[in-house]
Image (cartoon, rainbow, N blue to C red; front, top):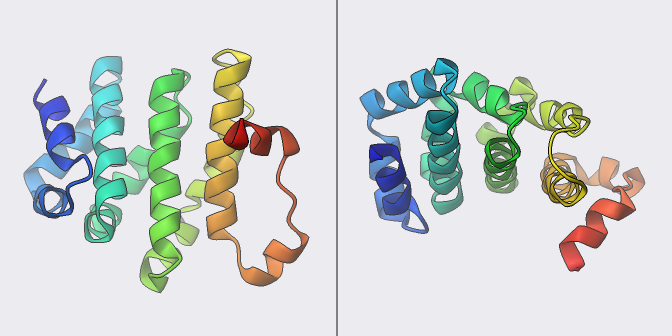
Length: 167
């Protein structure tokens, strides 16, 4: 319940997100929650990570520099439970969006290989067809954010994933 409350505090509030992301003990508890294997904790932690990264580039940087946080996000991205996996993919999309204007963050994400992990996790057959399309759209967005301008010239998104974004 505490994680959900913190998530609501961070939701589209840059100042709160920055403060929360600076709480080292909380970040450590978030990593432990992901590795606990307890689905409800993983769900709320994925929500909190997504809200922190969506709300503030500074919070995103702090999360990425915290030990084992990127590995925790990677684990959430391959979770068989769709809502957990989707929230984690949304967080990666936010991170890649921030990385467009922050080279250090871009380098961290590239080294961590989170977008590659997302693309591999797209093959997970968990969830219904609509859920897989939504996840595919989020992966497409994160991929588009993370590739360079030269690569973008030859990159082609999966048409079905783009249809999800405009329908």
